[in-house]
Length: 160
Image (tube, rainbow, N blue to C red; front, side, top):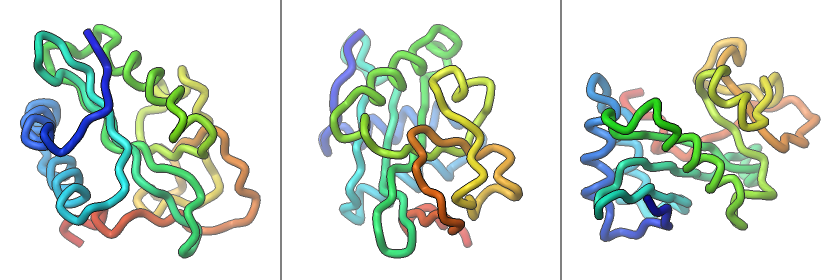
C-alpha cells in the first residue's frame, strides 16, 4: 500500500471510489467533481493498493470573510472492502504531516470518536454553517479567537 499525491489523471478513479464509499449519497462525488472542474485549490492524496485507489482524502480552503484561515478536510473515503482496517486512519495521519497541511488549522465535520483520536477537538468557534450548534464540528491547531462563521468554497453548497 502506497500513499501519493493525486493529479487530474486520477479524477475518474476518485469519483468511482466515492460512489462506492458513499452509496446512498451523491454529495461527495458532486463536491469533488465541482472542485476539480472549477479549478479550486484542493490538496488530495490517495491510498493505492494493487494499482487501485482504495482511499482518498481532500483538503480545501476555509475562510474568515475573504481571508483563508485554514483548511476543510472533506471528504475522507475508503472503499467498503478496506474499511475498518486502519486505511483511512493511516491516510489521515499521513496527510496531517504534509507540508501544505501540517501548520494549518484544519476543520472537519464528522464523527467525534474517529477524529478525536488524531488530536481534533470540538470546535465552538468558528461557527459551522452546516452543523447546528457545532455538534459534529472539530478542529486541530485552531487559533481563531474571534467569533465568525467559517466559510467554505461555493462548491460545498450543492443543492441549496
